[in-house]
Length: 341
Image (tube, rainbow, N blue to C red):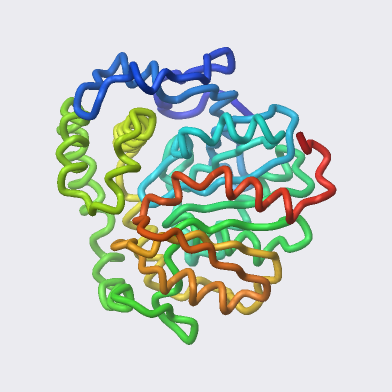
């Protein structure tokens, strides 16, 4: 664990970094240069390392919060990588005695590129990671494209996963448990996605790499055209720095992985939501224009112990603002955890 292997991103902030950020004094949208981005994000990162899996692949992970706390495995969105967490998550996790571990899916961050046959297969990698990190019991949470993987891990490891949280997560797009909404067209594109995912990933990667020097003003432009329901989220300078850092870092490994995510979401996941016995809470904004609220409502009705928390007026990125609620809910579901603050 933590050994050198392959090309890694530049060094990131260590555990001695000051987690406090003066929001009033922080630069506004479109005014952040590279040095200021480094100063704002990532904050209080304990480690960014990798483990070696049984088949020789590496799986990267980032870690925040309480070093000896109770583990919460976080599965990033699509696209995303191991430093994509809500900016206030490190502080919130540390205050409550949680060890926040962000798992990088294959082809993102430091994880070796790999194609799963179905969403369910991700759980095998997570089980190995949990064993190598000596995690007995843990909670899981996933945002957007991380939602299906969260449910897969809960399905495969009900004896180890205490509870789960899905934040604006996409639901099944095909099969008998297909969620309602426009995403039902995704399976029609799946054969094409499978054929073009490598060249398309190369094209997207090249475009993002060329645009990286203009990331900050580009983010400012996106804010102006983004749905009104998401603009308040993007006004946070820490949020801006996190998003820019995540996209620029992801570009160093390429965008084949998120395209493969889409191809997997267009196929059966390999398990039934009705067989998920772990308590799952779904958070979703009712103004989400990317993943409809109906997806969370549909999935919560299928899992054996599902609850929906609707955020009025909130958009797709509401999941980055509810970490305190998520951790408080995990607390309620995990009353005997050792690290309770």
